[in-house]
Amino acid sequence: MPLIRKVFDAWKLYRFGLFRITLNKLFPDILAVQTFILFRYDLKKGNIPIRQTNESFIIKKIHSPHEKLFKQFHKKFPAKEFVNRIRQPKETAYLAIKKGEIVAYAWVTEKELFINEINHTYALNKDEIFLHSCFVCKENRGKGVHLALLYERLRDYREKDLFRRAYVGVLSFNRGSIKGVKKAGFKEMKKIRYLKWLNKEKWWGDDIIIKNTKSGRFKTIN
Image (cartoon, rainbow, N blue to C red; front, top):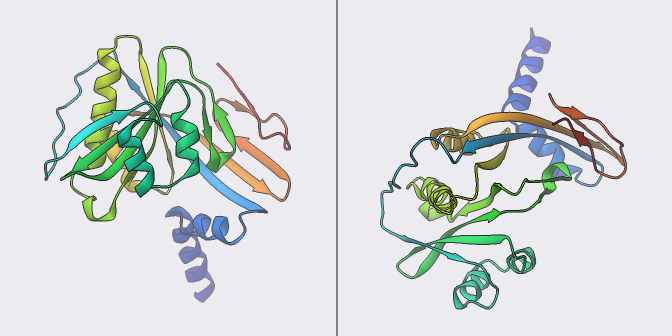
């Protein structure tokens, strides 16, 4: 009985992602286990809801590191990758601002996106976008800010009438985000499973061919 209980507890930890999170944090250079879920949204169909939040705030977008608002953003979130990202011609940052303070951010790319968690670059067609890297400050979570940023980005790119599909990706253990993107109307497209052990890597999924274990690349069946 004790052995069965231990096995059951281990399975629960694995199912809820705690086991994988612990492994990835303890051994980041030699071991990584992830499941990345890709969702899609058809920009040509359906209605995008008006944002609904518990508190009032405004959403602004920035395209250049020279904008005053970006300097304010980078001062609060001083990540070097944000400077490199905003310099790219097809990257846009969306900021949620409450009483003059930035409380959340989210990004959109119209080109390929490197997904660090699975060491893979996801390519996009000219009429596709990828919504990524959303973060909400702790004191403003649970107030609809994340969903509002999601709707705002979808609405913006639908109005441009140049794009037909939007993607968003979530790690499998992030159940809150999965629930949020499904609520926003995204449909699950596929799962990409990733395993890193020492200097070898593997990817597998419904439409993935394992390519090689050193370059960090694989082929996707179209």
